[in-house]
Length: 558
Image 1 (cartoon, rainbow, N blue to C red):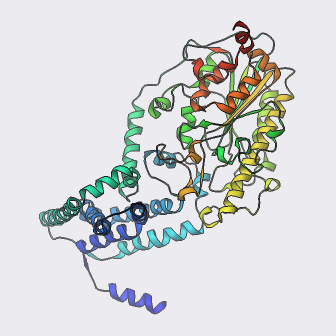
Image 2 (image 1 turned 120 degrees about the vertical axis):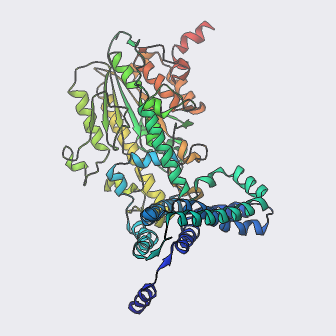
Image 3 (image 1 turned 90 degrees about the vertical axis):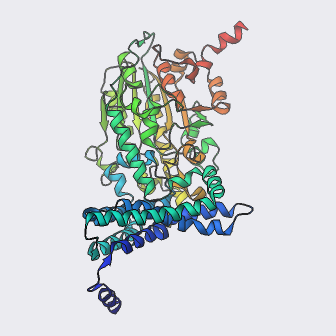
């Protein structure tokens, strides 16, 4: 090893490399290594075709190389040459690893997720595998470029002339290749639009620009109020106490109550009046999208992130109507939804027995909810509980040791190095633990039915991929996302007192849960209806309970 390093250093000793040669080497590096995911996906697509031109298949690396040369040449000005390409190599190394290991697609939505990721979540992705990959594919080539002696043109005009020649020749070669196989490229590209989001570094640079543009535009949108006409109907017997549990990263496919073949719902299964909805779609595939969307009056089809971030939401409307609203947080933030209402983030200092390190188990939310109920005046209230749930990749940190039910599990963050069985066992443990937390919250509500009409609604913000089709985690573009990321569990429990006050037929509700199709679009009006809030923005067709209210009277009138 020592002699190899010495020979390597001797090769560079006294040599100066023309910047054009360095440009070619950088372009080759990006094509051969940092775009491995793109090339692999392209050839996988070709392999599924009945027939394709072998020369067309062979042309792609060359076309990608010439495209890189055009772009890289245009940004290769002497004062910024090394800083720009060192930055690109380092960032592209991270992006390439994430794409290969987790199947992540870098669009504006994913950049938004990264921008809103807290330090604990970011650190969960750091492990021996990711660090080693970054050193080999990022730091080492970036370091070589830093120390490499490079010769640049003697004058600015000469530099411009050379760049025009290089870019022109590369563009000519690229045009020649694409013209020969235009129909083939057009066909593959049109039918597989995801490929355009896999070319490094174009994908994440374009997405970052879109994110910055979107943020700039959002900052210029005036803040708007909604539901200014909201009023609450007078309480007849008891005030209403609703707990809205917003799950994290739970997918319906792994919940026993949704037909999964493993016992992941053993605690809520024992609650006779709890109904599990079988077909529920999320608004997004990431928390940063789903949370603002589900509390907004907008539907997924009409959802505008900039508008939602500069507008009031369901919680504001409830507050205007006189409902006491509170948010208990255990997942790194409410994404702006709870900014204007009382809220609390779970602290390790407050629950030391339930918070190993800086992370707290979701049982701490049970205690926080109990404290919130018992220390406030009796009035109609909504308590939102935001779980840490099944947030990856460190699934094993989401449940205590006594809830390590499915074994062997995967006690590491580089989940791609676990077996599929270990990964599924670990994730299923998180679902089972969430089921326990839900049952504990319902127990608290049952104990307080003497003073309140109580209910609990649980729904996850989005799902999770566990290696299906090579995808891990979440955040895929919605139009490409698999059902594992968009189909989420939703459970609903109401006390007999609340059912009577709402005039809800429980059998009707159970039937709806079994046969109906629902989504996050239903949450806004369902909660307003449960809290008996009247406002013009309430939509009865989106209220899950509306079809089951006064149903006995409806049948009698027929």
